[in-house]
Image (tube, rainbow over the protein chains, first blue to last red):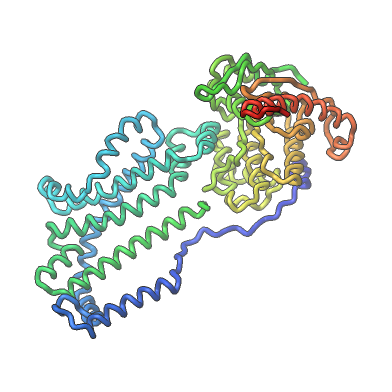
Length: 270
Length: 273
């Protein structure tokens, strides 16, 4: 049979398949050492150095105790914050990707929308906060809106750039196969633009956290940003620092989660 | 061979912007013919392929496929690109499955998977279906690209220097694989194979059409008289093979040398070669 004839012509070494797994990159010892050194410096300064205003500089044990005692409040605050962050960020990601794919692949849309995008994207989203609060009925809605604006532009811009930078052969291939526009966008352009999309999502997520906490400083009555602002007003600096540390940890964890998804989704990128 | 026309190229010219790439190309390719396009870089071989595929439109002139004008790309005329035509984010089975899905929408997913595995086995890649292109060597990838094009069940195959990046051993294997696939199918597919290797063109082709450069034009053609199946060792030691190869090379190189000469004198060297 034809298969046998042809199989006899070629001998193939089969390499071991690469697994598509969830994996974290373990940081090296240099990084851990540096963080330990910073903590040591913090503890050293707060114990041995005579500071002009010791109340402003809580030591590590004091901060940890404050962190422990306000943990329930902080967790509740995180839930509250995430109810702003999640809808704002994910609607921005969904819309940014969709619109980015369309604009990146359609000449006339690109010509129509890009000048506006170039003008609107660099406007710092924080300037919308007072207006959004005045305009929208609840604080949550206005904060969601601001987070959306902040995350939308990086996702959109990166998606459009990724779609436009796709190698021509992917497009030619799709044309020869006769893919419909919809499956071309979904199965080819989206996948090819995914490295760009993830970098846009990373920038968008970092910006979302900034905007979320800034918005909460303005007008929230709960949430991570509000927690920090609240205890600063009472000059309860151990709790304030605990709030900063906790917010940092939440941000780090969220970014780490995104990185994990990215590494799994982009296994084919060399 | 029957005389039904596969492709006809009638007085076709083509340009990228203001740079003329092809000028007044006339060519008829019979259905089922294995045609090799031989030419140096800049002779518009790739452009001609893209015109045949329908990925580009001629500036003037007309291209037909089976009597109808070529107005756009079609799954009827499958193309293998210089750089492998596989999507890097799909496994081999999914890449081939996508081709199957579009060439025959009635197939179920399970049938497509099964069929894809068969095509992979047909090119000697049994058991690699779940691998991704980046896990394969260059030769394996190009073989998978051929399996994919078989799945398209295209009646024309447009191959743009498909073996250009391979080592001589893999190259020879894939040449034999391609001719085996081509000669065992009925009816035979029309193949347009672009190369700049004279011996490869003679070994594979029924006919070799030579293109000259700047701008690309047809400078000659030779019918290859050797019967099939061709045996590499016998053919490559036959004096007729070398005579034909020399004839083509002389023709081909006189063109190339002429251009080199022009280029040298143009860059201000007082004496040419």
